[in-house]
Length: 193
Image (cartoon, rainbow, N blue to C red; front, side, top):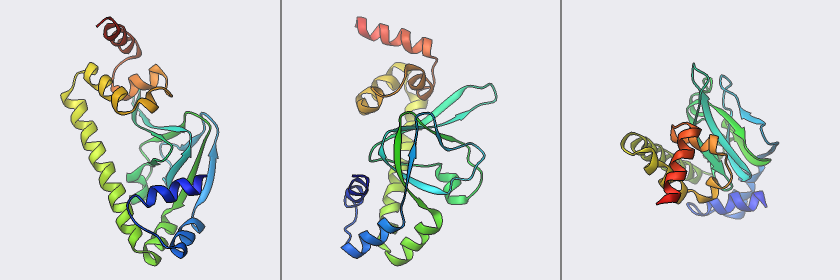
């Protein structure tokens, strides 16, 4: 199932023949994570790009006051990593934690380079994935800077209903940049409308 899902994801952007697909699959490693297990810890080097085939994960940091700041959630059919750490091989700024029992397919930086050499069209695929990640990050920054907490909340539940149902209020609040108490008040206010 997982291999089928990742190949389907790739064919949204590039077409592979059987030899290319088989070579790609040979470079992947399956990793399972129990709920609350870490895929990456802050300070470690992110050595893999990861495709989620099952489960839900979060990418977050902890500030000097101990507050969590969630920058991203990832679910089935999404790629997840600390991209800066992966690309530069410097210590990660983020934790990546499984919020559910999860399965991911991983490719190391070294194997990704081998893939680019043997199947150059994968450079196009990962360029598109990186562009999409950049656009999503830019939209998130704009949304965070120019929207009210209520607008950010409504945007999130409209855009990502499949994630909203799988995360706690505390996690959603950390993503929105508000306290759980404020999120509760906001939700009560919206129910009354």
